[in-house]
Structures are given as C-alpha cells and as structure tokens.
Image 1: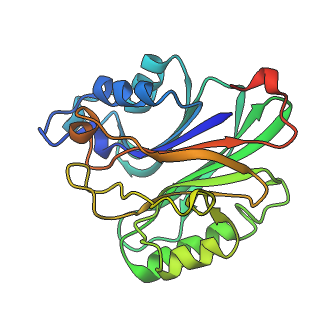
Image 2 (image 1 turned 90 degrees about the vertical axis):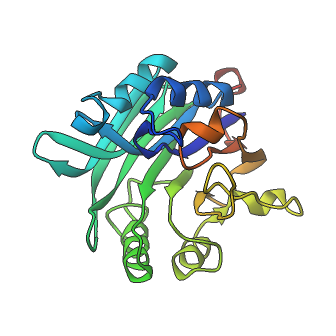
Length: 246
C-alpha cells in the first residue's frame, strides 16, 4: 500500500492566525503518508517569520522536499512542494497560464518498489476560464502529455474546482477521481476546515492504479492548522515489489 496526501496549508497560518509549520507537520505525521503534496507554502517571507516552510515541514517528517515557487516577491517565495522519504527526482517545475496571481505545477518521479510513479502537484486559479486553460496545459505536451510522463501517474492538488465544473470534467475525462473507486461511500469536502462544505482538493490517478481506501483527515488540530483539510488516498501500484511498500 502507498498513501498519498494532498494538503493546502495556507502558509501554515491557522484559524487562530498563528503561523506554525510544526503544527502542520503534526497533522501530516498523524496521516502517515508516503508522498505528500502541499500547496501555499511560504519560503523566506517576512509575514511568516522568514521560514522555509517546505524544508521545515520536511525536516519534522524526516523527508526530502521538492519545492516550486509559483510567486516571487524579490527574495520572498510562495508555492507548492512534494515531500517523500522514498527515492525521488525532480522532473519539472514551472508556470501555468495565469490571470492575476501566478500559478504553477511541480512534477516529481518517485521510485516505489521498482516502479517510477509520476507525481504532479498543482494549485489552480480562481476564475473558470483560468482553471480550464491551466487544465489544458497540464494535459498537454509539457506535463501529462509529455512522453516522459509514463504511467503510473497521479495528479493532485487544490484545483479550486468543484465536481461538475468544466476544469474538473476535463480532468475526469482523462484520469479518474480516486473517489470513484470508493463509491457508494460519499466523498467528503475539504474546505473550509472548520466546517467543510466544498470538495475542491482532488486526487486524480491512472485508471489501472488500484484504490484501496481514502478520505479526509479530520481532528482538532487539523481543524485549526489550515483553512483546508488533508485529503488522503491509499493505493496499490501494479508491479511494485511488496517488500518496498507498506
């Protein structure tokens, strides 16, 4: 079994307005995930004490962080990361077509039991047109359509898109939402954390990846640490050596 987690950490600023990467790491540690995709990380930003949040969280978890800054403000950075203790290589990190706040994606190849799993993490924009353009780019030759992005593949993140939206439907036509394998269990929303109403964080996978379990991680700390809740999927990769995975 391999556990995947995606989590918008809101610059590690909780509902109590405290910035606390250690608290975010505590939430993640309680999920016992193998591959972690994080969005909205501050690196060297004055507003959150100049901390490199990506590597601070990774250090708490004894993992390696691959970080992509989608936004540069002089020396201050803001973006997304993929964390894992498994052997991994950064393949690509870059921008997506954006209106207003710059958006991007990061692609890491994670080596799992003799299988190279392609993991893509993103945080899409706020307008419908922008999200659709970004999804088209992600499905195109620079990302999922790249010949190097061979199966098995997963695409995760905060898509700012509800099921039924144009961006979601386009992605679902090419990959599966892991919740499909868990039906008739009702999918749980992830935002806002204190009273979740919206399902805008998603995990998309290749059709042949087996989904074992999954859901939203809740709890007292998770309800305070960020404005989103973590989303988890337990999967099995065909061909991966069992001795190398849980």
